Length: 443
Image 1 (tube, helix red, strand yellow):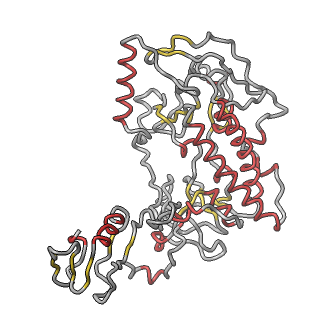
Image 2 (tube, one colour; image 1 turned 180 degrees about the horizontal axis):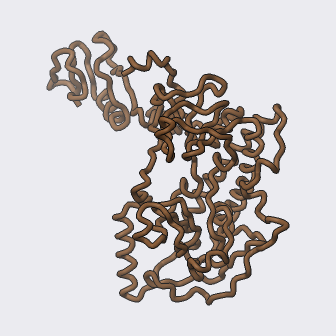
Image 3 (cartoon, one colour; image 1 turned 180 degrees about the vertical axis):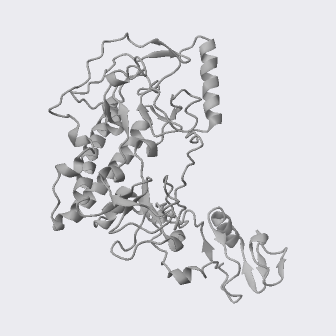
């Protein structure tokens, strides 16, 4: 206890008393008990306010900046002031596993031990082919929000300009493209790493991730020769279908009995049922409202007074989709390739040899399947945050002072929406941009 208090004067103990003295200030047992009760949650400053204090102890308390909470008040959600920008994964390297490799090996070892004993692998609903009743309303809510998200972005892109680089995947939301020299396209040397800007589309803001639609995810695997027999639909829509949403044109098998597995072998899947033929119609597309293809042409430009309302509805739909997809992925398996952007909704990945990324020759074009993350199913596609969209373009000398945000969030913010506070730290809204000459003298 004495180590926590500063040595401002001689400290001595009086054997005949129950307290102690620091200079002329007396501390009794009541003060000691108060110190013990606050010690786990309160830290003390470096000095006492004054030696002529009353007998009560007055200290300067502070709490951890990471939590930003008062010891007495209830916990509230507090975000850090600034966070690092998202890292760009190298293309000539496999993606990291979302689950630590040690845990994957431990789970595989436990399954192997059960298989050697002839014990079935315990599977929860969602993993065993049965629906999770509590997640059926979530799947419907996600699909409705996905429709609103596509419609809202289609309206906003008539008002908010978006630019995309012709040579790389860079996207910029502003009145003109930025002047940051970070293009990694094939002809970047001729352009000194400046981007070659063209008018962007909704696919540049909301990156389309498609997946094969399966009538029975636990049935036969998709082979390379049979890949054209299956339809490709948005991965979010396929996840909602497997979670309980019924679309007549894209049926899904609803099991009443769970599948049974011993190790990696399925011993009972309820038999193989003949799958219905895929939907083929040149006149109509049943998922027209749930697909980004040609969305900008289907919706007219909005009225200026309706832009803030549409932007607010769009950002709310975006948050609903992300939170709902996160909940569905906890129960339903989604796989992603560790080398490319391919996603497969189901317990096992398909066998189509379509991977052309790093070392695909060694794998004969097969994908390196691993558990998918939320950002792989619904990529945020981070873009530079523009403090003044109508001001001068962003320049490379001030690059370290700029922040980033998902493209959907940046579009909605420039359209007048109130975005969630969790995006503020990465956008670096509290940083004042210096002049280009002042930036040289900033440490």
